[in-house]
Length: 559
Image 1 (cartoon, rainbow, N blue to C red):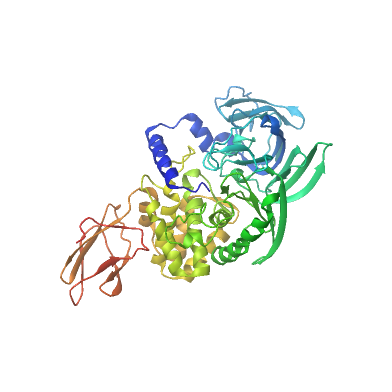
Image 2: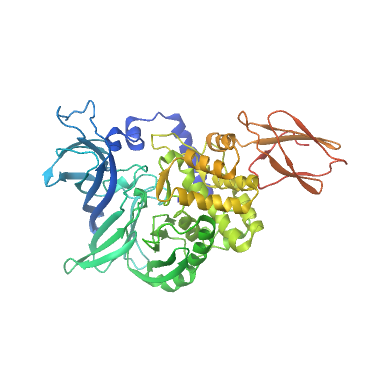
């Protein structure tokens, strides 16, 4: 999620400038690449047990990681390697001050060492290709406290309005390994999901992803909540929410039958939530129209109140928008349309399709998550209020675009692209809708993406190539210009009586995107390149307007 306000845009710009000035380290590579110690095994399931020690603001737990062996693996230059072993090192990640206390396989204690958050485990049991095994990591510690979630990551140990514990985690950027040991790289998700068992003091309630399997009494002072996700899930989407929750629920009659929708809110907010959360059914109706079926019918849909703005935790969308429309009561687009819906309900739920159903393989391609989801906001408006409303909303967000650096970051070092991935990403897709010029085809492309890449991790290239093939348009230079450079195309033009001379500037070689303009009182298409071209009218040109639905700049040569 990490929706950007004007202040956060400025902070992001400063941070991005610092990133560009620094060199990436070995720890960046260990975090952001598919290392040999990750590559040889495929995640199958997490069984995560956590005891929350609220007074100490700390956790104690264990995670049993089930995996399948993909290929024989013999690492080189490993300090603790023995000559006769293969598949003997596995990388598991956990960030300090959390620590791994011990690791076991089949009851046998395993040796491990670490380089920063990356822990390398010496396996003893033969690892046979195609077979499934598991290890159990015991861990403990006080996780990093999030200072401004969800923009920075960690745990929150807040209190509600009555002074009672109100706790949650948000860790999209910093990584799930900030609080539990896992394979902390987005390319590999557990095929059979996760079981999460949370032990905490009574009468607090623990809410997590998926479905509540069991609430079990541990002793007079503690109980345990067992949650289960059956679908593959990205690590950063796994969450814990703790508070004095009450719940209400309903069912949505969707494209794949009845979808269970459950809402968890603080007890004193129940009535407000029942009113505000009626927008969920509208969201599901609009997004199933545009994107296809909700991706997690088997796990249900949950909306959970938290002590921060909110985030896209899979099948457990978190909410902290104050039970009001807009983004904290404001319209990010300036069009007026942003106040007709609750931003967090719509945006964070849009991530169920883009981020949770379709997940980037490398965070360098995070624009897939944020660009498509920011774009989903105006599609919601399109469905209920029409195309003019959606156009006004999405083009209104152009003023938030910085054009500071490319949307795609640096691969294999855990480096995201520009924060422009939100609204530049949305306007890129909106421009593409204009080029395709066939809304039913565009809708089928969006539905097709979610069907083709259902429950998968993907690269930007895969998404780009799918859209190009489905649209029948060669989009090679389009994607390279908008995703891999910071510059927006400029349409330079000169008007001389009944002639318009025009061309593109600050574009890559081969960029020749057509653009719709209004000349006098009629709409026409121009086909600019990097060389001047001429368009002639039968009478003098008195008005020339570039269609605002295209993400381009008006050139300095305009007269």
